[in-house]
Image (tube, rainbow, N blue to C red; front, top):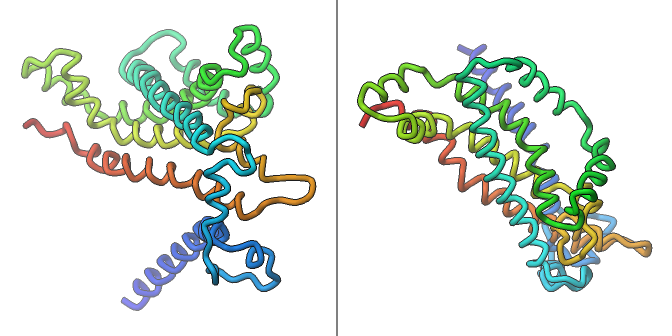
Length: 280
């Protein structure tokens, strides 16, 4: 009994330590965002601001340094993230069903290529993609950048969704067919609810990919009105010094939509594990 208790204490303590190490940078970022400059550059840093201020947030939201409203950057990032999530989820789901349910030529080769694509460093694709977008006249456009993000998200999404689709028993689809359900109704009433957790997981990955990406957006976009939120952060870095207060405030604002998106979809991740498996 004592051994079991010690083991439980050790596991819980290790989990709390890992959690603290992971959360501490985010906590310090949010805390610094509310600190006045004299506390940020103090030689005796404190975990909480002694005199909280919203000046840094006001500077970011009103475009005091970036010269363009924060909401312009937010709109561009939101458009890219939403388009990437919806398009990658649709394409990946159709491909995952085809790979998991059907046998066709070069199926194994296709799966291997999905893994190979994930091994290529994204930085190595900057120049080739720049040339391709230039030939297609998609440089300096959100549509061209969205195509790039979708291309990054789809291979990972297909590979992940394939496992979810393969885990759905064929007997459920056969039972639905016996009850008179057609292929489309079977897909939406049986397959889709059971694959929903995988869709949620891949959607979170796709959202974070499009929301946080910097290199391709900074390379392919030339119009400041089309810049995304990660590019906005560069305006707070200068030769004379870095505006750490606005940087932390902007980073905190960038983090909030990701947390909100996760909270909105995480319930579906849990409920989708059993939905559709019981006739009713």
